[in-house]
Every structure is written in C-alpha cells, then in structure tokens.
Length: 225
Length: 225
View 1 (cartoon, rainbow over the protein chains, first blue to last red):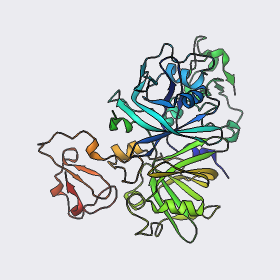
View 2 (view 1 turned 180 degrees about the vertical axis):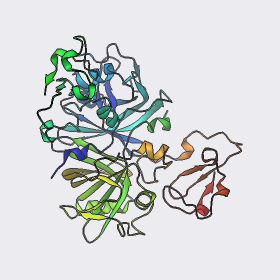
View 3 (view 1 turned 45 degrees about the vertical axis):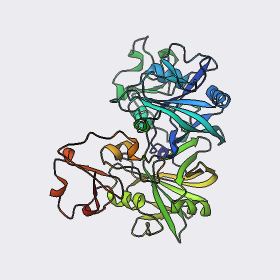
View 4 (view 1 turned 60 degrees about the vertical axis):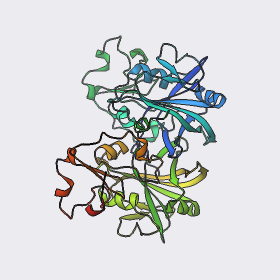
C-alpha cells in the first residue's frame, strides 16, 4: 500500500536547471538535484523526457544549476516551472551569465550556481537522469536561505508541475470533506490552491487584476474545486 | 574553480537506509534519497561501495528508507551514521518492523517509511546508485517535521561522514583566522565541532562524562583544532 502523503516527507530544494549555449538555451524548475559522489564531486538531476531542456542537455552535454532563494518570486518560478521552452524563449529578459562551457546560468533569485559536464545519461522511465561532473561552483548570495520544496508547498502553496518526478495526481490523495461554506480555487497552470478559509477573502472578492502568486496566471482562469 | 561552500546550498533530508532480511540486516544514514519518476514512483539512493549495507542491498534486492524527524537523537544518528555494520549489529536494540519484502525498517525517530525493490544499480564511482520501485509507504508521525541536512549541519552542528556523497575534506574550505582566544575541538568519529566561542564554555570546563551530542563519542577523544 502506497500512502502518497509519506512522499511529502522527503526533503528537496528548488533549482533552475539550464542548458544550451550562448546562441540558444532553455531551463526548467527541478527539485531533484543532489550530489552522488564526493571525489570528484558529481551530481545527478532528473528531467522529464518531454522537457525541452532534456534535448538540450543531450545535445550540448552540459547543464547548470541555479539554487533558488527562499524569497524567489513568481516571475522566475512561473517562467521556468510552468511554461514550455517550445512556446517561449524563457531566457529572454532574464539575468543570464555564461559558464566556462558556454552554458547559460540563470542569476535571477539565485544564491549559488553550479556548472556540470554530463558524464552519464540514464533512462529511468518517464525521466532521464543526467550525472554530471562539477566543473565550477560559486556562492552568489552569502546570507539568503535556499528555497526548499517544503517551503514552496506549505508557505508558497505551490504544487509540482505535471512533468516533475514528485508530481502527484490529486485523485490519489484523500478527498477533502465536502459541503463547506468556503471554497477552493485551483490555478490550471501551476496547481496553486486559493483557499478562501485560510486567506479570509472570498475568491470573487479579489480584484480582477489579481494573478496567481506562484506563476502569474490570470484570476479568470482559476477553476473552482 | 569549485567553491565548496556553494555545495552547502543544495538541500537534502536525512534518512536511515536499511537492507537485509528478517535474519540479518544493516543500515546507514543517507542524505541522498530522492524521487526520480512519478509514475510509477521510483526513488534513487546513493551508497558508498565500502558501506556494509551496499552489499546487503545488492544481495537482497530490497531496501527501506526511514525519514528522520527533526529532533532525532544522537542514538539513532550515531549508530547508523558513525558506526560500521562490520563491527556492530546496528539493528540490535533498535525498534524494527519488517516490510512486505522482509526488509528491516527502522522506526526510531522515523516520521515516514518507504520500502523499495531495486530495479537498477548504477556505478557512479565511489558510490553505487540504487534505483528502486516504491512498493509500500506510510506516515508514522503526522505532526513532526523532517530533519533536513541544513538543520543537522547548522543547528545540530553535525558533519557528513567520510563515506557520504557530500563529505568535504575540511582542508578544501577556507581556513578560519588563527590566533583566537577561543578554541575549537573536533569529534574524530563524526566531525562535530565544539566551538568554545559559540558555546560560551571552555572545552576543558565541560564535565568529564560529556559526550559528543551528535554521535556519543567521549570527550577525551576530541581533537583540538
């Protein structure tokens, strides 16, 4: 028996993983970035095969990781987490530096950056796992706290995008009791839940120019649960 | 150029990873446990090839993960993190349950447990990465916070064991300024640093039965830095 709530007890950070070159690049939000060996330092990251960035990592053989700060804004998370590089030039308008390998590194909301050369690509099913050797790392903001997935879920009320390894189909979680006076509204883009009871304001009473605090989706797109 | 301080910005939890059978089992402390695919839920964990548990996972093809709570005591972390299964029967005296596969699951300080069958074993250098399919998971303590590696390092003042993927040779970190009035003492077993300045008490003034708060090592074994 699998209790999906137990999976939320596993800790992760949140990162922008980027790939490509000076000519063209793309990135996505990942919570699965972790060190796999200490000497030499090697890291792994998982990328959905459907992600535009997966193809870029395969072709360029390099990727960068930007560690997001706790106060990361909807602009960075919304662009990299809930838009596709197939439709949008995500790096346009972002603060980008190019690494030793030419890989783009996103500096927006980043407290540290790491640059990797891919040593191995492993097919793990829906995702590819890239194992990279660390070739450059630096601290960009000494004082700021890293954003954790727990903070993102519980304080920022964000949900995992469909392509994330940690995505959970809500029908698998226990249904909340029905018949309440307060309603909940879900952002169709990022899964953010607006809970009237917690917020203290009816959804209908929010201004019409109110947007999703996670990804910037418009109020009119929200779906009543 | 690699700045090792940047590696500390990557977030992890802390877990007891266990393997074996009802007859014999062993476990170790890991910070690298992470979901790699959502459907079916698959997780990966890295284990140093020198770890006794690595051989058990290979032979039994199963492993369990116990998510540690924030207030996990020195008993659990000291036994699983800083002792070797070659010398000690780590499971003796622990609160153990056996999973569907017969794998031992450590319940001490655990807030959730996950049970896996190994689907793939990948050699990543000093470590083996085991990819397991989740076959059972449950929440053991609804209210408790998971222990994060950041909390372990900054609040509990613990360091990574030598066999951990995140172990950092201290000579690679910038040397602290010398000639201070206060001294620091290091636990030879777990790397915990007793800092006289922060603690407000000279190491020599601590009672002789004082032990390392992380792993229980005796005061007399500490090394002045």
